[in-house]
Length: 255
Length: 346
Image (tube, rainbow over all chains, first blue to last red; front, side, top):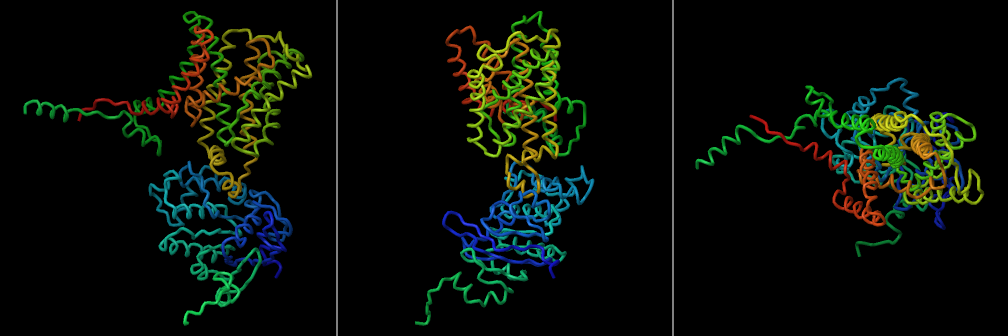
């Protein structure tokens, strides 16, 4: 049982000034699980992700990844042990061609260790990967400067950049936001397929409908605390969740 | 009607065409050049640069020793400007190249005078040791960026010059004199010129490799690079070391040339001139810094005839350049070069 747990967050707290962004939060994640994290704006989702991936240091608590303590480790070290994140405000490299974004990930120590001597073919590996994510192999778009391509493509490039690291646990921070319906429809199967192949995924999302289709388990945060943790169906019925989202005022429409 | 007909025939027979038609697309993406003509189109500018730098020192008899001296100093400033540009590649805008320059100059002088190390070796040792010292000081500062890094680098050379002045180490205000010159005229001229060309082309090559990609990535987006599992501190350390080594080399050559090193090596001039070269020449790429240095330094020498008004005219010219060619001299020239047209028969 213990072995199945890939990520464990123990009693994590972080406050900015007087505001408790994350308030003694604990959670477990099993290998192969697809966990959704939702919550209203300012409920501490991004802070939690930033602490797990080493971009912020917690005031209190621990993050255990595969049984080892990774609290306060440098972000690049965390990425190199297979815990990879995407950014909410997408942060690709703007001045280089699109496929080079993926090449950058392929230069990391982790890929060098896993793939051995695949030097010199990084460009090809990158283009293969982008093709898997629905880019056409010979389209001009792969060779354009990253700043010139549309938003929906950027999200997919960001996803490719993460997958190139061959992660064991992938954290997607609002990857669906700002995407059109057809774009979401094309990326959801990709995420599902990655999960079926054994990749553990955490999705932080605002698009609840799409998330609930694929998530195995959903955690709801409000004011840095966990207010629900169960299957999507049960979370939908949960009264505290509803009041967190909609508010407590009771409106009687029939009157 | 008749004239119109003749015009038409002329138009049909010939039309203007850019000489880089088809070549540019081919050498940007897939690197296939079909003929000697196309190859020469690509390498001609580089060849011109190399030939210029190699032939200029040989023209001593025609141009006189004065302009050779200007050429020598221009080469050193160009190296300093390239080292500034390299730092700016990782997003570190330095206002203190004088620190690197002065460190190189002092260390080379001390090695030469106190340890009696012959000249070429003292320059090389100064480049290495100086780079190490500069990196140890600049690297901790590199964690902060933008204007704050600029402020820190601005302070460091002032700090060192005042320390030397107050404690009177390394000769205090009177500096270290009696440093041996390089001696041989050709060795003296070609040593920095070769290092300049070598550094220029090697760095350009470096930037087109995957490692260069990571360097460009740091300036673009540090966080994304870190979350891609890249150790940005290692890369920054390497870039700062390389940049410092070039700057120290430049300073070391200068001290053997004047056979003297004093606190003037830490003066603000050496911080500002490389910056001016890079901005004037075009801030994107090493070519801009190089061309900028070859405009700024001779220009400042040419204006010596004006006496006290020199700095005024110099400043006005620099402002004019920046206003009229905001993209930088190099970008302007290269754009015009690609737009040269020729008549083509159809």
